[in-house]
Image 1 (spheres, rainbow, N blue to C red):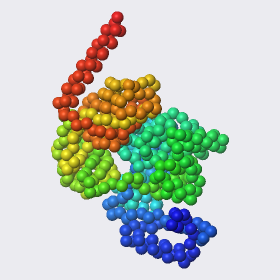
Image 2: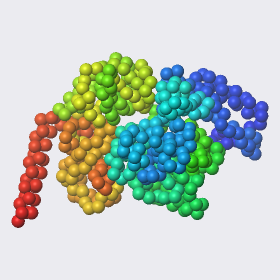
Image 3: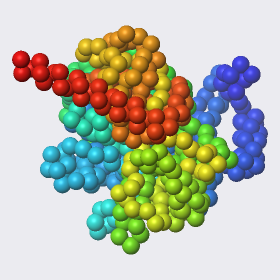
Image 4: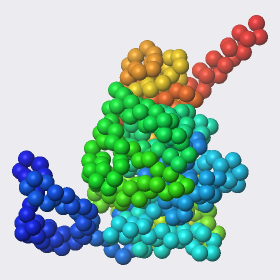
Length: 507
């Protein structure tokens, strides 16, 4: 590479010397050098390599990919084919392995947030091997053999389950978003909604066009044309790239983290066409965020379980710091806004027992001496060094993406912020009313329980077809007594409004 950043070819002698230098540097930083491709330029040869950091036996790199798209786009089917290595029969064979509930198997529609993993070894080969008897995946064996694990967050495509999809996008902190489009149906239903959500949360998007084996050529071209037009539109401002070969994969993967480039894959779950290109792209993806392990620990809870013989188990994502076995953390906030000390008695990562987890990793903790009923989604486990404070009220800069009428003070809607999802009331704002496309600074108050928030967190404000996105700018320090007083005043005001409305209707 030249001083101007351009690629210039080397002759054989210089190439050998350059590769030897890079190999020695990789040895010093404990990384592996993996050859990707060779091409010829006017000056000579150009070779591309992947440098991957070596991890310990019990460790692996983790990248989270949210899978979104309209209902019947083939999301669960694609994940079934990728993770189990068996092609679909065109009648829902592959997706049956992923469903969690009986009604999902009967309807063929995902209604809950599912998690599936795809492991790659140091050479970039898939290590998933389904069990020969039951056909299930042994997550522990996959993680032991993998140097990198892609976690797919399988989200619902139906409008009825939009709140579950929003929770998956905010609470599971995906690094990337895989938008699925059925080539025969095109851009319909929730496709634009899910794309807008990913853009609002600043999650880089790549597109997978499915069912190309059953779609006529003219319909496929029309779908691709509409898709490229949508991605280039002022709201998206992406650079769509149709991926046709391995060269395209390497170019798009190396430039993907800039968020401007948007690769488009065309695949078939029945014939397996272009599936190898998608797997290669997933192997080349790297985590977007660098986490500092020296900071005080913070862990957000997105699910709770009661396991026989173990007790209460919580799962979620480590936001920063490091959590070790037998650490004592503060769990909260409870309905009174307090945090209680809790000891971690065991840690599992992708169903594999480990002794510690670091920032950016998902994990499950078994907790000592606490009932599952006293823990809810949205709670956090933090280091005592942070001295956490719960809050009832906060201010945020929001942008209204869509609202059929106007938004004014006293308006209530669901706030999604990380793994928090709770109804909040607008107390005040710096404008009289808000319509679609408006921006404002808004003062919110939670109506049920206080939450643990900090500045610069992204939030989604949702109610029916109303959607707004924003960033928390200020967390207000309000005591529980003050909050209860404000709450009683608002409750009385709302009761008065309800009373006069009923009187008016009777008259």
